[in-house]
Image 1 (cartoon, rainbow, N blue to C red):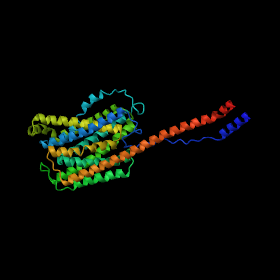
Image 2: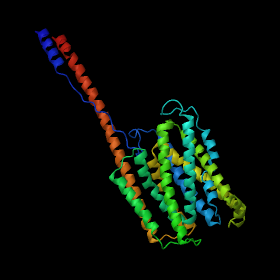
Image 3: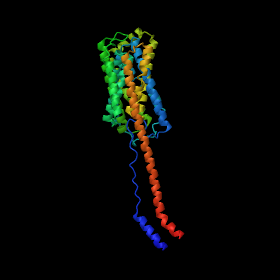
Image 4: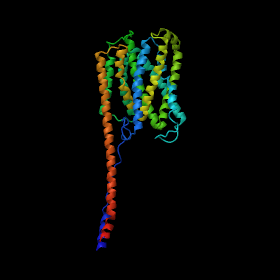
Length: 402
């Protein structure tokens, strides 16, 4: 009887199969979310991101103020201003020595094709040179406070390029950011009351500076998206050496292009004249150019590092963070006017930035829930496995007792 009972129990167990549906796993985090791999980042990742954020905010603020100081003290060469934005790249070779070439990465094994990478560096370098030229012209024709607020439009441009090139998901909050930043720039564009700055800049130059700065912001956003695309599809190496190589070689190409423009335009002859007419001493003229170059390199290392560690969109958001800081220093240092239109524009830009942070918060919350669901499914599978093992050995246990 015991054997028959055991046989019946065994038969019923074999006919009754416990089926567990295993989910496919947590969804992939959004391309713009700062928490990659469901927030399971170690302290080193957070440290590198924090350093990059500091580089972007501190470097961009100081570089913009120094660039305006150059024009304020009597400098007038747009090509010299363009040249110093990338000419400081040799200092990055010192940082390159701190990272071993054989550092392991999370990308594909093997090196990317040298010829393909070289072409990408040359193209990006030429685009960067053109972008720097537009930025230098905009900073020459605009007060630094207006210039900084117009630069906030780069986030709206980056949303479009990230959607097209980097498969960035567009949500209602992201569209809200685009509309708010567009409205913020439109207010500055129609602000005809500020047709002259402290140097007596006419209205036509103001409009030209506005359009050049707006075009530079769009080009800058395109550069960031192309860099992210290069890291993901061509370089495929998760090493900080790749970040420094990207910055060094693109800056090399941009510097050569700026030098060609400097000598072709004949503005190189103005350097000695600028030193003599500079309102400060000649030593201050030299140090202004040197520290402007250093500040821009610090900025670009942080920008490319955030593109590498997180995404181009997140890198642009951090760049936007420093924009409200610059007008405040400009009012104190250069006595720029802070009228009602600028204040409203700044508040709208801040509203757009907060909206983008809210989207990041929602994406991060979803990623955490998905990760928690993945762990829960693992526990369910382990529990079901235990039930099956118990059901398999239960007849033998009953037979042993009898």
